[in-house]
Image (cartoon, rainbow, N blue to C red; front, side, top):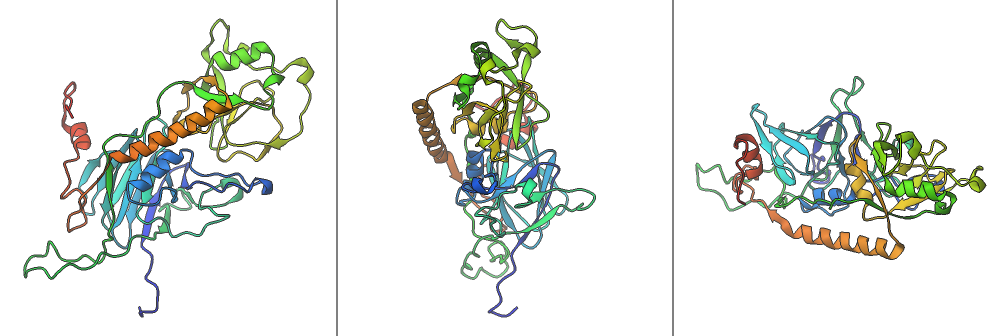
Length: 394
């Protein structure tokens, strides 16, 4: 390769099941062209995965779907980080040895090694790569939106058993150190390693429990008093038909306080508002009520217009919480006003800024293994070796 030729981009092989894709902050501003924003369902988890590598927080990362996801550097070592609480993380080295890694951490993965991550409990999780992915933006984003074929889906099937191979930007090579003494190969410069700031979070980023807060939608007063009461007092359950376009809800078997069977908790419009409505613009978080009376919370991939009445809209601060609701999981709604919604958003941003202060730099060994000079990974160690009832005092 001549000096004028650009260096080949390092490649990362990713094998995954249904629902795994690249997502960043999405492509807002294209609704007039019928293109939804797409993007990460939880932008805070996306930011966390990137910050664990010292990346800008909005770089595209892998949003994990169902089953296991496997990551293997093909050309040179790559730094990876993962954000997720209910995930199982394992690293398999080329020689075949396996070890467990803790959540909310980062690792330099040598060529040929495999990082395997499985999402548990239905909660969203993200994996970022040091420097980001070397893929072109489409309408200002690398996010995958399947209905229009935009962005990158990561899927292993009969047609693509090896998944996808994506180019990465990586890092600028670290400068070579002073010549090492003869016979001391431990400090020799490794040209296939990138300088990376790797971090581990001493605490997970978690959302406080409680009902999902909503503001009244444009058709809030289209529903009778009994339906509005049911909307705010029913415990709703996430249906299996939910996806990135929308979360379909049904009343839990317990129903609402004082109500009968779940079917009696369907929402109905006032008689004067029973006709058709014109399609109108909708956003992620809008809660539509179709003719069957069961609400749908629109997601990141939802259509840009809709013809069902919107009873309420999830506030920005609580919208990411929905990414962690498993099928069969339950939620309730709480009404707030616009001032309270804005205050909640500012508080969420302040809380995340405070969480960033718990990131701790991880030392890297000369062989690129960031666990060589780091503190012991206690979370993984305890998960494997502690007997039931024994806990750490840390």
